[in-house]
Image 1 (cartoon, rainbow, N blue to C red):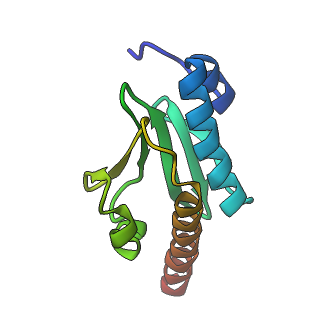
Image 2: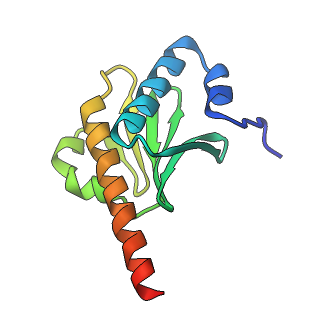
Length: 129
C-alpha cells in the first residue's frame, strides 16, 4: 500500500518543502508552456503529463535533485544529448541537481519534442487501423 494517496498535482506540491515545491512547479510550468494541451495527472504518486496518448514527462523531487522521467525510448535524450551530457541519466530518467539552475528552456524544447513524437506515434497507430 502506498504511503501517500495524491489525487492531483496540487496535492503532491502541498506535501513538499518550499524549495522542492518551487523546483517541481517550475518544471511543471515549463512543460505546460511548451505543450499547453498536455494533461497533468498523478501517476505512480508523482506529477505526470500526457499528451495525445503518450507521456511527456513525470516530475519528482528527491534529496539532491529533481527528476524528469518517461518510459523509454526518450527521443529528447538522443536529440539533446550534447546539452544533456552534463547531467546524470538512466535509460528513463534525467537527474537535475538542485544546486544548479534548472535548464527551463531545454525542458521546454524536450517537452515539445515529446509532444511531436506522441503525435507521430498516434499517426502511425491510426495508419495501421
